[in-house]
Image (cartoon, rainbow, N blue to C red):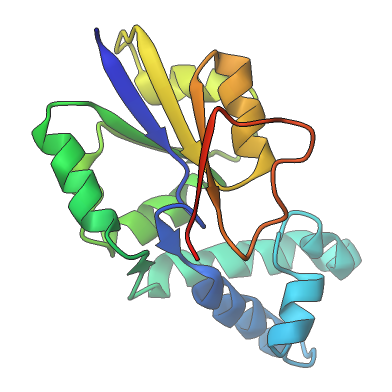
Length: 196
């Protein structure tokens, strides 16, 4: 059977929260705002999707600055324990692996390139400004596979959105239950494991 694995990136393979917090605060400095401490960051900006709306008419300026800083200055990406070993092992079995993330694609590619994992993935797909398609939309799968035919797909992620995506594409769902996420909501994954 032709099997492929789709990984979420942030919170599943890599811990990029501190990197994001650093660059959110760089934008805040530039825009003349107070720096967020850990608790404030968790409360205001952790998800980042709605956070940028707080800039009002300067939303696009702040968002562009964030992505430019992030892409150009990210230097160190922390992988979760045993991730590199697992990815290499799966790669050695000849199973194609993909990353699908709701991060902007240029930011995602910058992060993956700073890790030790980039060469083990057949394709790495994030959100592109031109189409704004993101998980859980099934078109993200088409973008990632780019013509690769698979009979069975395993989706591994750490959010309810990842589990909804797995359901939408007919994939086996594996939930990475971390202390940083809120769970899967109404969607029951087929498998789950804790990172703590």
